[in-house]
Picture 1 (spheres, protein in one colour):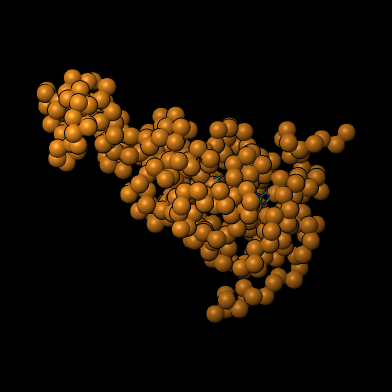
Picture 2: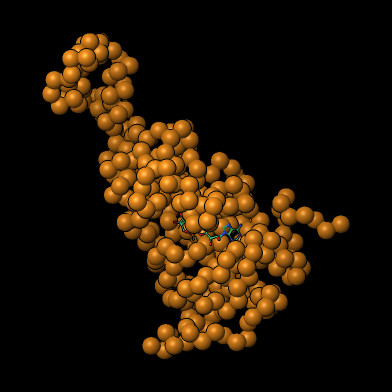
Length: 326
Ligand code: CNA
């Protein structure tokens, strides 16, 4: 009850951008909680921005709810839905935004406790955020795993499939299908049709009997589906998320920066309320977050806001997207 009451009382002493500058100067255990908004300047759409967000572009898939693209039970039923849009959120760049550079700067200045990112683009790694400082709450595109046999590969192995919108299949499953195949080769192919094929297909089926290409097509078509190791709705978050938060960070944190997220996806949306209320909480995003009462809202483009914070702090934030003062 005390926590709930205190949550409603805004800490009075922090209101302005200069208060945030002072907080940044004095804090040494900062939690930075990030979302898709920190990567939009790199051309990766977020989910919920009104005209540019992925959800507004998904109407054509005929889904009742665009979140279904990332629903694990729907993925298991029909992975083509996810694969048809994966290329839109797949990072094709190893660059990072000024906001990623800012988080790296906090790390270099020994001020970063943990960067909890909801992003799956793995760009924090390109920016040099150390694995020991990074929790990828929703996994990432760095690796992919077979739903059938749990074989894991780096995502580079299925990159071509992701880019072309084709469902990636497991190499190891393809191999074992080949090894299990009887020498005649025809039995498995016939099972796939579940009975006699329509007459019009007969010639084609006969052709299959001697066709290596068709054998390969079949083997690939029934092999295990590769799923990038991102956390879909309906899947558990990595254990490291709650372990780090409860056992490592909660008692140490002295400042919370929430950047570029609508805070609408649980359980990450509950992190701010879970941390001690006496810890100052700052929100940096384009629009205010109506369901969380932050001490300070710095509204605007996050790259611009962090550049301005660094300018006032006298910290050099090196990035090609930030104009240099002459
Ligand atoms: P969201 O719900 O789309 O919210 C993004 C927020 O950022 C919105 O409130 C925007 O107004 C704001 N925003 C967008 N661009 C900027 C900008 N340049 N400066 C400041 N604010 C900006 O996305 P969330 O991250 O809150 O939702 C969590 C989802 C999104 C996670 O499951 C992610 O996996 C998922 N996602 C990740 C990526 C990525 O990895 N880059 C891309 C798209 C979606």
